Length: 88
Image (cartoon, rainbow, N blue to C red; front, side, top):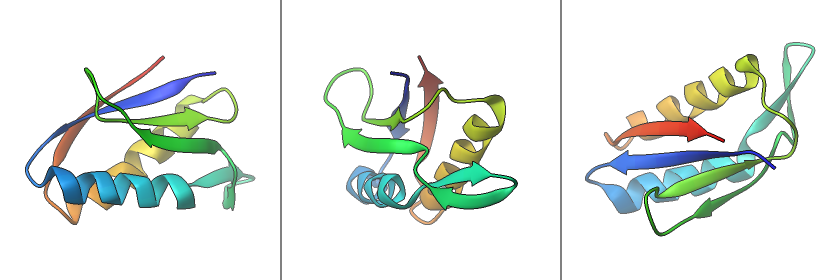
């Protein structure tokens, strides 16, 4: 199962992690250009090289990765935290 790993550059780290947890619960699935639930199976705070991971419920495409990036940008712009992402 693929995961998208997020490395946060804060502060405010706590607020950023809260936003990512909220996003993981609400992140939509793309279906015929519309948004429905289910593409992200779960999100988890992790300790190590990365701070958070989104677990994919299906193989991500370029389109779904861009959707994830867009949604992360939206969520983290509220708190002013920057990030990098790698999917593997």
